[in-house]
Length: 424
Ligand SMILES: [Zn+2]
Image (cartoon, rainbow, N blue to C red; front, side, top):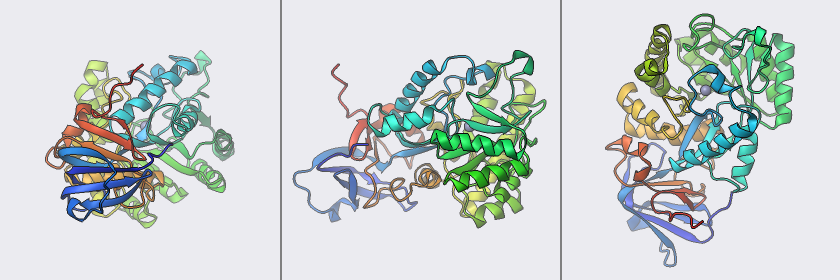
C-alpha cells in the first residue's frame, strides 16, 4: 500500500492514542513519508513548516479502527443459503469489494477475516495492498473447517450440494490435516474452525454442542503451525473453548461460556479473543422481524449474557480483546460495525477508553501487527482517524460516517468528509 510522501500534521484535537493512556488535549500527530514521527501535545511538537495540515476542528485524533472478525463475503444474510449457494463467486467477489470499501469509509483501516467464501479474502488482500481497490489492511482466512454434521454442514445430503465453497467438512484428524494443507496452498494466514455450535442452530448444533473432536482440532493446529499459519475457532461451549486452548489455538472467537480453567489457559499463553457480541443483542432486538424463532432468540439471549460476563472477566484479568464481529447479516449490515463499540460501553460496561483500546491496539494484536498499527506512536504507520467530536464523551459518534473528517492509511487520506468527491 502506498505511503504518503512528505510531511502531514494533524492538529487542533485531543489525542486518544490507542495505548489506553488518558487523552491529551490540544495535540498534534506528525506523519512523514507515511510513518508517524510524533504524537503528543502540540506545544512540544517539532516544527514542520512545509507540512500539509489537517485540522481536527477541536475533535479527536485516534488510530484507525481494526475490525477483528469481518466476513467480507456476507451481504445482508438472512437465511443459510445467503451464506453460500445464492450467488456465484463472481458476484460475491463484487459484493466483497463493496464491503471492503465500506469498511474503510467507516474508519476501519485494518480488518482480520473471520472466514469467507472460496478464497476471496486472499485476493482481496492483494488487491488492497496493491491499491487496486480501497479497503482495510487485511489478514485472510479463506474457507473454514467444521466437523461433519456440525454447525456449518447444513445442506441436507439429498440436495447433493457440496459445501466446498465455504467450508471443509471433515471426519477425523486425517481429513482435518488435508483441509489445512489445501488452505496452505490457498495462501491464507488464519485457519478458521468450528469447535462448537451456535444459538442459530437450536435443534442439532446449539451453543452447547461440540462440532469438532479434540483430535481433529489438534491435527489442524499441528499442520497449520508447521506451515506458519495461525488457528482460531468459533467457540461457544465451555468444553470447546477448553479444547481449543489445550490444542494450541492462537485466538478464540466469541469465548462465550468461559469458566475459570479456560480463563487461566487463555491468560497463560496470552491468547487474544474476539467476542463478536453485539450481534447477539441485535439478533435479540431485531431477529423477530427476520423470522428467527423464539428458541433461536432465547439462545442468543443466553449467549449475550454469558458472553458479556466472559468479556468483563478477560478485561479485568488483563487479557487481549479485539472488537468486531459478524457484520453483514440483514439486521447487522456492513457499514454498521461501530455499533460494536457503543454496545461494549452501554451493555457490557467497558469504559470508553478501554473500548477504544480493544478496537485499535487489541485488534492489531489479534492480527499480529501491533508493531505497525493499532496506536499512534512514533514509528508506526500513519493509519489515523480524525473525528469531529469527543469520542470519549460519546462513542456512538463513530457510528456516523459524516463525523469522520479523515480516514488515513499510511498518511494518505482515503475517506472522510475532507476528501473531495472523485472527479469521474
Ligand atoms: Zn463469524
